[in-house]
Length: 269
Image (tube, rainbow, N blue to C red; front, side, top):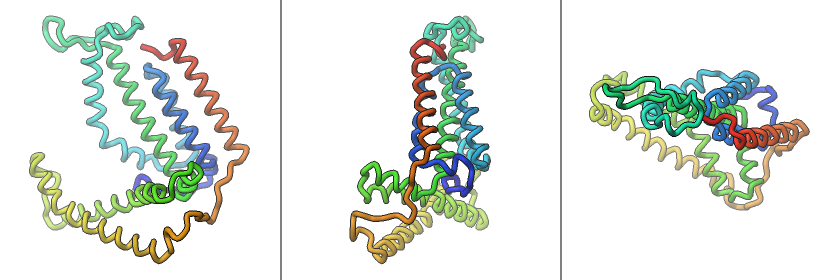
């Protein structure tokens, strides 16, 4: 259940959802300003410090990154072979590490490897920062944020409901997988075609259960008068404090400094 809210009283939990969203946007903006991996590694280190402050279980973030390992390998191969040394400006990046084919063919440049590491750090940082945002913020705060942004309540409900039921469907999928394995289903063996066929008995109960869940949710919404009025209220209103304003100001200032540094050539390859 990777997207489920983790209660806590850490400084990250106490921040307003608007401050967290602004910091998240600033982090993503800074990630794409620099191509040198050392700069993005410092941003990732900051995200790790935030996760430690929030006391989040790293197994959840690790569980999100584990399926991406084949993607990481493919990215490194593609950037290593498709970015020749001539595309980089720094002497370090223009060096050739080795040739994969006799006759000095298929060269792998240092810049290609460094840029591949940058892409990996960007993905890891985005996954980790988005996890911190969702794991430290109640779903009701996101719903109030959408209302503040003047998003129609129908769309807000669809978005928040989709986020809410991702952990539920993940749990149900795990239960169905365990049930099919106990019945002798060979899910993790065979070729690609056999694995696809093996997942058919899993998808059928998942689809049926999701339809049943949506019907129950619709009945609950009708019983509670959903749609009777567009001016709905909340039990606890979100409010900005001086800490939130300070965090937003610092995040914007640091991002502006990063933009100036990138324009002056810092972090380039």
